[in-house]
Image 1 (tube, rainbow, N blue to C red):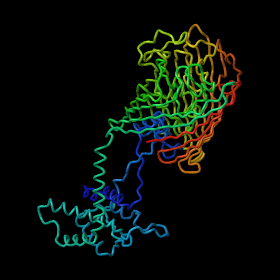
Image 2: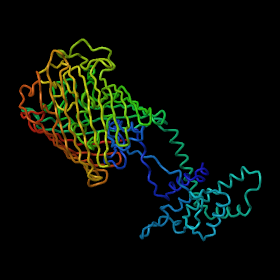
Image 3: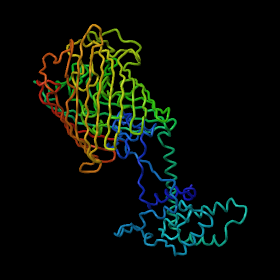
Length: 639
């Protein structure tokens, strides 16, 4: 194998790399992406692609773009893993290698480099007999390719290791000619010159060949023990301490809790352009149907059903401890399939995707740099526009079966759409009731007969400094909910109307990020959710609004570290009609506000620590509630 490595251009690059001659940096591998199906960012975009992201829901977005390179102009929601592959340009010729700066050659600066080997003191000059002898062999037997114009620049000095690499290539070439030739093709004087060169450079040749042999052994070992030739495995583990104070009046502060979430993601490609994403997860958050054991319930800020709250963290599932399809419980740290999605291109500008465990955020870029459940903002409020979260669109458990497309209108503009059905696997809605008017399968049954959502996003990049996303979603719910998990009024969206009343939602929103510089960006969103009773016997409507604005810092104090400061209004009833109440009974209506700050310290390529806190003013739109502070210390491991 050594002769093929040394006789080829790429082999020379590889040889010099392992010999420690060239400061070649490993290239980051292309991840098929928590990680959620958003768009990969190019070098000009602001967001750091951490990986996975955090979650595959944070990273599947990048998968879709693997299938279509033209989407590279849009930012990725996912923060990509920092796994690296060894990359060597196969077009590099031996002559180019000679002129490349190496560890054993003099640097171009005026400062003297530290000498680490005696061989560095004896570069081979063009006037040396050895250099001229090798040049003669190269011209006669063509054992070194030379520069792209087929010339061998014999006026440049070489290190002894570089010379030995060229000599080894000529030795292999001449051995090949001797073994296959039928005539006398190699001159006797050339063989004498080769023998003399071998004796003078014996140490360097032995070192190079030993390193090649070691690489061959290591390569064979990796090939024999690799996980799969078609599947990549990556993952994320989050361990966090959470403490809170405030909440509903007369409630004591909850204890500090320690929680975890672990995700393993398998990305398989069958054609090189498609991707099958399979995600497994386990977490120890509690909640269940009535919120029992959740931090939000201890604060007194959770809804009486499903524990929706503005005090929820970014990495917590929307329905912790509960299978919302059947209202059955899920044990702490039990393994779940949270992602199953297949993405495949069908045309140059069109990519399709479908799966039985998917989320809206898998298909739509987040736009805002605050998104990243394991890496960026610490609250559920900050990461995504609320329109993406309606109908359980970002449940964190792959709630819906979904299918959709990505159409690249131009390099800077694309349109995405999907249809999602929550209970597509249930043939019929259960007859029994969990609450008056609410079935034990509260979201209905069937692919088209239960709760579902049609969502679209137009993603636009008018300049390298701007990213814009415009969203619309139309939803139908079998029960009276928003399905965002963002506020306690998410349950009973039409206040004063029975829980079993079906509703339709028409939701619109926009998200903008403006990069003031490569390290500073302004970002924000606005959203309006219009809720109407879908029953002929009920006339009721409610409008919810929300907005957020913040500043994001990259490489703050140290390369790789990020930080964010943001402020906004969580979802809040701004208008009602018909039988719907503007202020639920017993509440004192007040506009809620959310203030958050966090700092992510990148300890290593695979470990980050994020301390942060957010403060809720008039929590859940009720001034009776005390100002609430939630502090988080999150450690994220990616692999």
